[in-house]
Length: 354
Ligand code: NAD
Image (cartoon, rainbow, N blue to C red):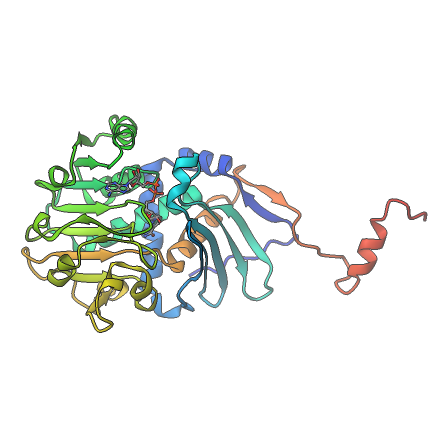
């Protein structure tokens, strides 16, 4: 793996929301999702080389603010992200974030970027990774439950990477379903808007739940889940915030990102501490079995892990090289004489006469 060289100047490349949108359109959304999927897969394959820790979460009644750090020894990255389900009512995002990549050798930042869009992209790429390894062969129909900010990205990643052709939408709020329908209708996917979760899962081989509610919700009950289905449970990602009835977990083979974090935050917080899970990276490297037969229910209990953000950050850092999709930020004091920070300040004093 190539080490990313630190910038020779102390200016730090910054990717704004505007630049991120331009970058996505320049590359093409589906191409970007495929490339990001490949980058996440590469990093899952070298999972053991990363520093890993459950994210640092600061909870409040309304939501959570989280820091998600990791390092591969050469590069360090972190994301700042929130999760505030009630924000939508105030016209604000449920999930918003930004992230930073730094050179381990010097500690100097290499990249600062928006990560609200990038989180939607990396979460979609990661769902596609799990789906590619775990879904039944020939799966073409996705039930997408929860049609908020993440949903179109989820659907398009499964189209581009897993061959999904039909998407059955359902949201408790019809306006969200109508919005997703409008956004996806020219995507090449066959979109069906449903008026219940039960109708959405009918005939679907893949079910993705991506709802936001700070409670033990029951988006899916056991009777809704037939044999052979693959589930991506994306929205249950915080203590006290789940989407599946625990009877589904009793029947499913469950795959997770990083067990110490998922046991606190994922669907499996409802289960005993010895509930068996398989780490997704082990399936990807062939160290553990994924789907073993066509009748098995596979569940990706996704909470979002720092390594996925690291992959997204290093992808963006590579992609912006030699482009106009960033600006340089002067956020790091770097005097010519490294020890003369004070002198640098003095020389900047406008009242100083020379
Ligand atoms: P959002 O608020 O934009 O959308 C959530 C949607 O869920 C809303 O449209 C809401 O009406 C719908 N909803 C709520 N309760 C429902 C129910 N009972 N049945 C059907 N629909 C219901 O949020 P978002 O940005 O799309 O994020 C969705 C969830 O995914 C959040 O909980 C967020 O924390 C989580 N998330 C997880 C990851 C991860 O890596 N696992 C990454 C990003 C976001």
